[in-house]
Length: 269
Image (cartoon, rainbow, N blue to C red; front, side, top):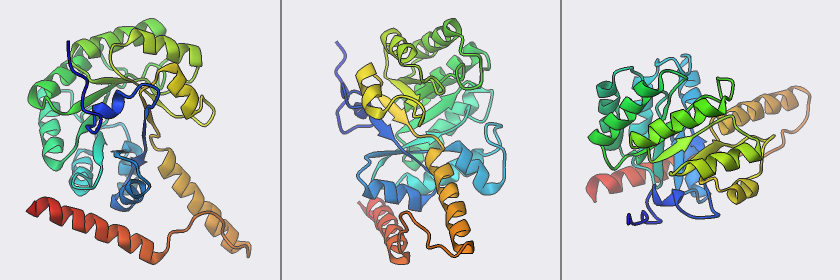
């Protein structure tokens, strides 16, 4: 019998029945530091924000360098880091394995790899290559059947089976919000199921009841932050005082110092 991962490990956070890992997605050291200060033990990156920050397209393998750079910035933080790596930025499994080595060296505990509805066999080969290169890296294998496809259940299950057989530690089906479909996926999979939180979908408590083990926020926080900025400038232009939470200058500088201190401690410890 295989022992359950330690609860404090990244894998262990996926094996707490009734308590799914709520995984917020950050886009820079300040957002990651602020989330960590609120008690989140694990934080992910979001490929949309990485791409948008530098004016490049998301999901088109254009941001490998920027993704690794962000991982180097966040990997020494006081939290467990999972990196959204699109499809691995390459069709070559060996190239994706090399990316995994770089992320692991940067301090990442997990990687999210999406199939983008490409061939399931090719994505499975990438997963197998990553697990062979970096066995300790938690591979969350995403299928886009509900995100960019038509939601075909047979195709979804076929892909999830292939990715699990290739060694995926968890599987991710963004775009699925129907409780019955989610419950069916939980029953089918032998590894933790990850879903993307939707304001129009089940609550976190309901997802826990359904057996979901990981709930990602994706680009939601980044998009909400942009929305808050637009709302604030509109209020100011209209002569109103902006509402919502506004960290002070000192608050943000404190996050900077906490990250610097963590980096220093890790380099000398």
